[in-house]
Image (cartoon, rainbow over all chains, first blue to last red; front, side, top):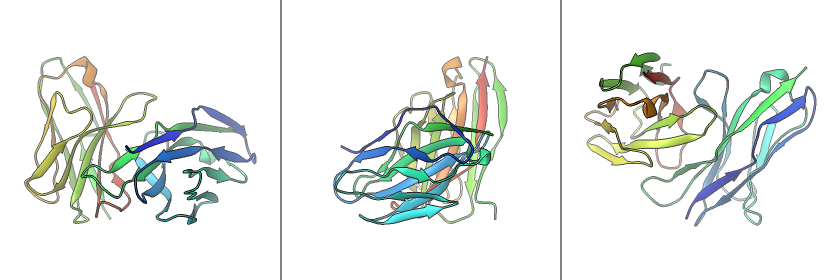
Length: 113
Length: 112
């Protein structure tokens, strides 16, 4: 079946630290992969996406590479800011099935000055 | 640029009351979803729709009902509210089954 396994949180980092949030997936075929971010008190919004193997999604200094060989889509940022404090969700959209969306459980990131 | 609009943003219900959470989108998206998010937890799918007139159950449909009479609207009905339905509810839509999801701002419901 399809599923997303995401790094457990919470994660606390100092400003300008390097961030990695791990995400691995199980899927048949070739899913699309997403990272969504949820700022406090808001809904989720798309951070970045990748639709095929070896694609790199990037936005706001965040990057993630679609690795089919390791079934991973790890989120990275070289230097985090306080404003990056949020909950991050990894998700996949499978090729088949009427309900083809699968989310990870979310990772809460807190960046301290 | 309205996107996905949910109302109300906040609501307190007494046990046994009923209410409808409204969701409308102006992007002409076929796919619409209702999720709930309990404190500190991830998203759980309640119901979804792949087009007007078509709805289906998600992971946690008990205690809820939906309808999809138009492309734009996807209301979620809570019958006989229970404390276990205290949560934040998110409506979302997307253009097709491979596209990104657009979320509403959420509706915070408390059942006392």
